[in-house]
Amino acid sequence: MILTLAFRHLKIYFRDKLSVFFSLLSVIIIIGLYVLFLGELVNDPSIDGYRTMMDNWIMSGVIAVGGFTVTLGAYGILVDDKAKKIERDFVVAPIKPRTRIIAYIISTAVIGVIMSIFTLMFAQIYILIYGGPFMKFFTLIKIFGLIVLNVVTASSIIFFIILFVKTSSSYSALATIVGTLIGFLMGIYVPIGQLPAIIQTIIMFFPFAHAGVLFRIVMMEDSLAYVFNGAPAETLQEIQALLGIRFYVNGQPLPIYTHFLVLGGTIALFFLLSMIVLRFKKQK
Amino acid sequence: MENTFNQDVYLLNVEVMNMEAIIEVHALTKSYGDIRAVKGIDLLVKKGSLLAFVGPNGAGKSTTIHMLTTLLKPDSGDIIIAGFKVGPNDEKIKHEIGIVFQDSVLDDLLTVQENLMIRGSFYGLTRKELNIAVANAMTVTDIHDIAKRRFGKLSGGQKRRVDIARALIHQPNVLFLDEPTTGLDPQTRLKVWDTIEKLQKEKGMTVFLTTHYMEEAGKADYVYVIDDGKIVAMGSPNDLKNQYSSDTLQIKPLHKKDFTPLLDADQVPYKIQADTVIIPLNDVWDAEALIAKYRLHIVSFQVLNGTMDDAFVAITGKELRDL
Image (cartoon, rainbow over all chains, first blue to last red; front, side, top):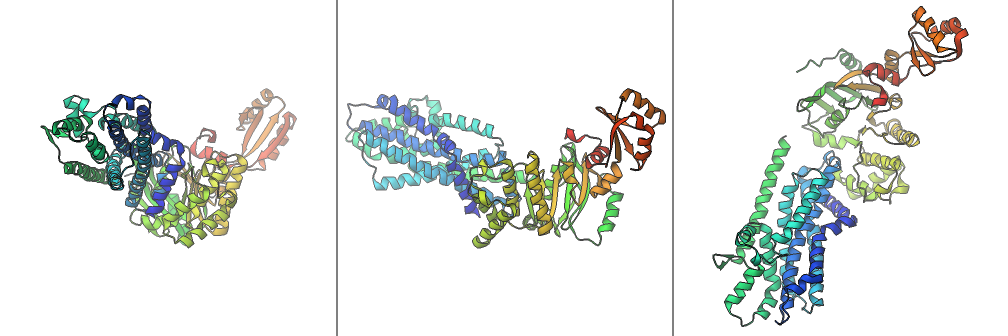
């Protein structure tokens, strides 16, 4: 029953071509901007491998952002079901509320992962076009793991927010705001290191920024090592801080496991909050 | 709480002691904040009957039907459907009831068949049982020819029949329809109505429907009229017509100006509608004497039976056109 319901959500999402396009819109815009001029702007042709490194930087951000916006787009099914009162037909049928909720979470996560993989393919093509290499198999496996983690994090946060959204118009307002802000919060439009110190600190409190960091660490590993081969540790540290490959607190990089902790904690926290809200709503 | 005891319901209760009631509602209430939408309703529905639930907008029809179908929790009162109590036995009741909502609840982007297969899967049938159940529902509603079309591309009447098919998949004993014919053209309305009657007569299904059209309520076995959150009248369509409407003599006079003073002088009650003078009759034979008396002033006349429309207006004091 859960799977039939989840499958219904998937079918509806993918049949609505326009909404698929719109949930990919922020990804398309970012890639478009880089193809048009930003790519040239951030490049330094005098350094061998710099272009590939920056392309990886951009694309890791794109995949991180895409996972979030696509998952948000997929939750449009839930909002529509509520707004169009289709939900009633599920309520009058003998399906447990828990089953209904899990079906939405599964389907949005599946949609998020499928579309992120598409984005990854785009990214690989983009990198190839500008002279970069194919990603290593093991890197791809790691990216896939991060995609799942990123989507689940996004799903837990969005599910909680969606609990308070009742109309399609408030949902699209939310999608617009998130789509606009997320690029900044993930440090894609402007490298994190170029933002004022206070903003940098604030960004660290946004869980998805940590997903961005993990994507960069994995995707830029090789190109970073190539470009900065033999360079002093300080130079490397500087570029890592600038591009948001690592977060620095008091001059020390946050250990990688902290990013996983932040994401895991976020999932647990929002799951718990959603449970509380649902219980509270049920009592009314 | 308001005293909801109702003499008519009591008598009805006695009357139906022997019959098998499939829906029993007692002292049902529901408020939204300060607004008391349903103020103590009692209902009894005989198994296999067609019940029409009529009332003006905002009378509490939808609220009541939502409580009966487990969508809304009542503030107080009892609902028993097919022997199960709404509330503690919701799961069981959900297998017993099918609902056609006022606004369609199926997915525009999916085909008719996909819609039915998905919604049918909620009822714990095996794959084989589900295939058969969906095929049966499509046969009853005559929608096999549109099975592969997207629901969103169908006409209003086709959609309605698919909605009904959706409500039938799990072979419920009671079918609820909330305004099933509203917004359909007259011809389609008749076709939908045929399907509903077929379900009741041939499948022995109990049908509980709300409607705006009094002529449809006239085809029901029993009618409940709800107004302002209370049941204000009930009975078979004939009972209601006899009790709340009268036959009328409709006269087209030669000169209205000359004619009406005569009626006034004779203390005959009348109403004027355009160029017609309408005289209510206590007995249809009274028409004979009236026609004989005023024959020189009459261009043409007709004697009409009271209608459900008249009854409704008499009961609620509201014109149907306002609905």
